[in-house]
Length: 225
Image (cartoon, rainbow, N blue to C red):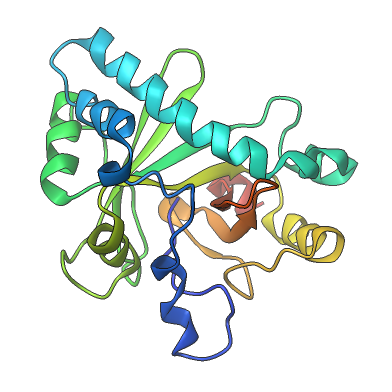
């Protein structure tokens, strides 16, 4: 579900490089959050129960931050409907280095890799656990390169890079966020994401001063209807 995140201001080629270089209180990078680092390591544990507990911890941290940032959205009836309230479908996106990505994938039975558009710097797979726990594991295609995931990992290390909300109509949700909440999308128009989804991203300010990167994604079946 990840698109290559390179711009918030959408002004010039120079400003498109700034998004991932702007730290926020909710980057949750492993170097700054020992509980998160421990939980990410636990995703490759040999025991299924340990992997589930680790996934729950990662999911809880990512979802809690997003919950604060998007709390006001649920007051808009149409937007709430588009985002499946009162039971939104939320996935926490975790960026990790290649070695960690491979280790977690093997430990969890080698899940299918998502089909990511070739112009986007990502490889990814999903992990789902009982209780609605959903994670999206991401890594760069070119470690040390100029892609979005590569730059994120270089600057912050492994961590919760984004929180993803399923949406019935990303175009309409984007209009509402711009008009009613004055939140600009990362991209000027909805773009292709993994596995035929349509996506856009929003760097959302939280009431306590932090920022969270939110992805809205529209599944392929809906996008093509």
